[in-house]
Length: 100
Image (tube, rainbow, N blue to C red; front, side, top):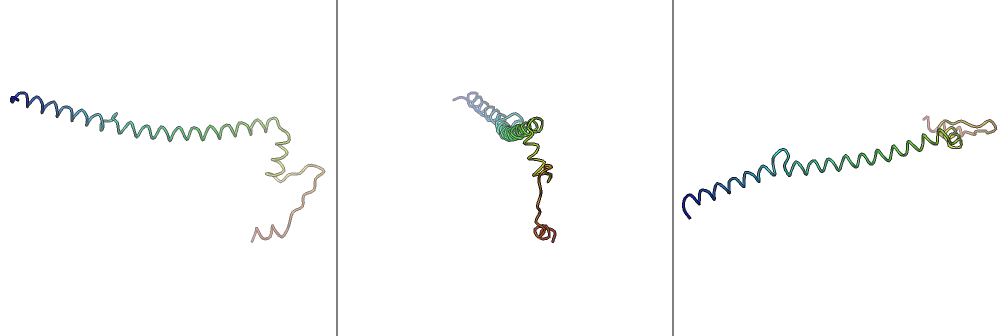
């Protein structure tokens, strides 16, 4: 090999190494791509969780608008309400233990 061929070979090797460096470590390189894909997976899982919660809230809203039995159930269990002909018995000893 002549000196010109050796020089051309070494220059091409250096250029290839520099290009590989840029492919892996530049702003839009392979490592940045992998980091962004990981973020994308995290965001997609958050979206799925929020979509499930939205579906649950939509069904609850629909039930509150239309289902009288559901409204009565919530009134009884969450707000300690009773219908006109119902009696509520409370255990006083349990209330005393909770307050102490």
